[in-house]
Length: 194
Image 1 (cartoon, rainbow, N blue to C red):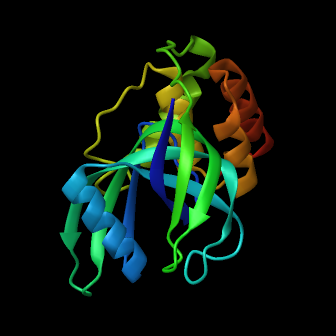
Image 2 (cartoon, helix red, strand yellow):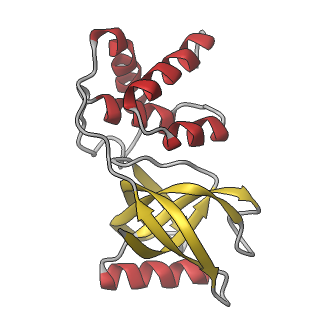
């Protein structure tokens, strides 16, 4: 099944279930947010391969996350504050760039992982995630938590830990939650402290 969605290319990686607070100020993205709020349509968050977040449309990677707007407000600085909620991974099939440099893509949705209970061996990840979340503000402190779910715990850690962006992207591409846990565990063991 394919869908057509506007893309929000960013220097970040978002997983299903994760919140992404953003400041929106470019006209193309203000228009995109307005349209998506009115039509309740999704926005594809996808990592930049070459180029910048601002200015001409950048070249992006192939895998991203379909998101929906969960909250918005006008900020004191005049910008629009938007929180996107990750729903489902996708593969970009093709895309076009509009005159205003907004990228519209045809995407194929990738099934979400089924619920997978986190085993005892990975409980240190839960403690680390709880420690990180306790230091953050909304939307991270106000989201529903699923500390027994392997996909949810690993995804939140990957989003929040200071891993290299390409490492995060490679973990997003994986179709096996156990492999993701094993790779994440290796990253954690390579660092004595974050």
